[in-house]
Amino acid sequence: MSKILVVDDDPNIALLIQMTLTKLGSYEVETVNNGEDALTIINDSPPDIILLDIMMPGIDGFEVCKRIKENEKTKFIPVIMITAKRELDDKLYGMEIGASDYITKPFNPEELVTRVKVHLRIKSLEKEVSASRELETALKMSVTLQHEINNPLTGIIGNAEFLQEWDTATPDEINQAVVDILNLSCRIKELVHQLSRVSRIVSTTYVEGREMLDVAKSIHEKKPTSKL
Image (cartoon, rainbow, N blue to C red):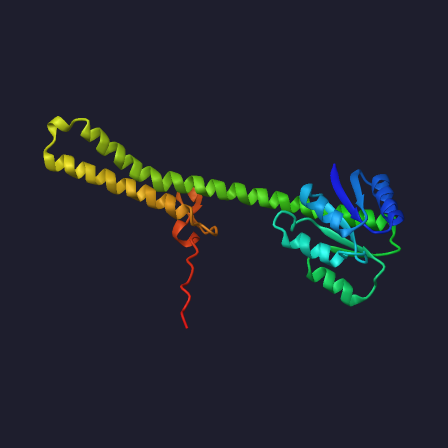
């Protein structure tokens, strides 16, 4: 069940919105009457969507919306601003600071519920897309590790097996095997280091059409800043 937070300094309007949403939709609705309490609730237990009045004493709706969008934990929560203000500039400003939608009082109950449903659906689709991208990235990383690490590991194992029969090898052969193991180990260490610096996903085609991570191109190098 989706959790909705209604923020309005008028308890009657907050109750009306709560009753509308619970009657016409299957939601868990919580109400609060000021911006300070709203921010506390949003931070402690983020809702799925927020219906936010603008004109409130203390921290107004605009400021609440700005703080929500500046917080990494809450910035993706949809915010629908509900207000009696009809000025275009106010609506545009609300959108600029991150509001997802805007509805004016008096509102139509069916329209309110429909807009809530739409934005919850959009949020759900965004989560699905994000999960799909994460899975795709994980698969590409798996192919990369299989390709990039398997080759040096094979070399390390081969040299280690050779050293098991050191009694038949010359000192130069033993020394070369040790050098090879060290070099191959360094290759793996460097790959792990590069993977820790990946900041974007750039793919390249591997065998059988499988995609793998192009490690070098996926590392964003910071340009040195010039000193004046």
